[in-house]
Length: 429
Ligand SMILES: NC(=O)c1ccc[n+]([C@@H]2O[C@H](COP(=O)([O-])OP(=O)(O)OC[C@H]3O[C@@H](n4cnc5c(N)ncnc54)[C@H](OP(=O)(O)O)[C@@H]3O)[C@@H](O)[C@H]2O)c1
Image (tube, rainbow, N blue to C red; front, side, top):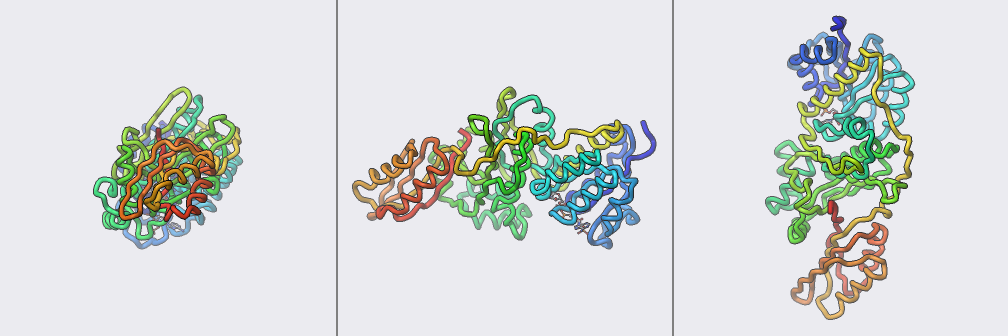
């Protein structure tokens, strides 16, 4: 084993960074044996230098992250600051000064992954980011390496623990959205400002990263259709139950049936209780991958938290250190397929539509005609009447999102339709 240590600069020492430092220290012998050389924490960049940080040598702590990545003797920079800047500039500077980079930064990778990969490649360095999607769950490496000889057709996942916790609460207790969110906040599963989670931004960043890797195509954050889950109601769960379904916020990356394009989207959807993703409870994450040769694979585990996320960071650190010792680099960006990303209107799926209608003869026929005129075929209809008003629940066969949107627009114009109470896609069948 080489005795000269590989030097690691840690950028950020918060929830994830402090766990990375702890594991590096407590497992140092095992890490050295697995890598073939010791790894040494050479510096820790933070914002507040005076904060007490258990297990961290205060002499390593600095607020000058730029000087740390420019030192020239750093082998690997671990970026766990988060956000776009200064993380982007620090990572770029690290490559330019000879370091490889491990990051957990989904926002940055989804926005600027291609540019960062390009700088890594120009400098002959690694950029690894297993922790950026679904925390501890091995997903990037299986897609990038284990499935490199297969053809992935679909990635369907619960990639945000906060939203899964809220939806699971609503499902199991009948609670409304706000009540379930309040409980998630009280238990520390939701941030004081939960927008990034509940509006689907976090999941959309992960969908962009997963689609890019799965389909060997550049998928930008702007390419991902996004709908949050704040409008999901207890009534939607009741309807889902009647259909033998539950509701999850899903990230869905699909190759079109003709193979000529891809789509990526995030929205709440009904899935059958028989689907493996339906049984993912609490704040857990799971990703279901469908490929030509392997068939169906499911990856499941804790999608966040300091220690689980640090596990993924450490896995990358070991891989990158091994590459350094071998004078090699691992797989970089693979975007050779360059498939077009289709708009949401082209997505084909089933829909569950709940309408408030007048309870009088002929309404059902009127509604059915509108569906037929837009080429959306109805699978089932359920009607409940009360005091001259009725609710009509229509479940369709597969149709494009554009056809469904046209149908809903026309339904809203009918005098007998008082309102469209909810529209939910039905997935996983
Ligand atoms: N938390 C999770 O469960 C989780 C899961 C998956 C991925 N991630 C990703 O991991 C990354 C870090 O998340 P986190 O939860 O650990 O965040 P965090 O707890 O807020 O920690 C951020 C760290 O960055 C430091 N920092 C902030 N601005 C800085 C600057 N300009 N220069 C130097 N240091 C700076 C902070 O310093 P101070 O300590 O002085 O404030 C803190 O140590 C993010 O990209 C996040 O998306 C997190």
